[in-house]
Length: 106
Image 1: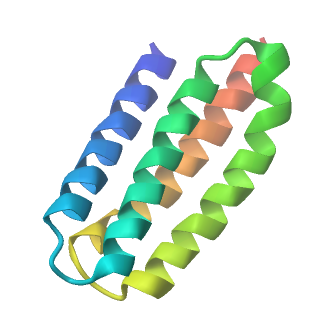
Image 2: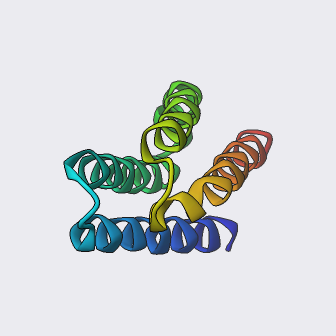
């Protein structure tokens, strides 16, 4: 149930990022950053559903990349509709870490 809920939140955010990137008239960098971020979150969703032996070694580097990508989004975007998702991205990174910890400790 936890996997499904977190996956749904991530996919909704990725869809929102894709839509704001496609609808953006701000500049090319905004569009590229939102698309890269949307793809990153879809990859995280796939990794969440991998078996433990594959997920566990992948999740730590992926979460570190997520923190760097989120900070980069904040610094590059400086505004726009995607900026609202910066706090949500940090919350979802924490939820993914927590979910991985719960699944590994079973």
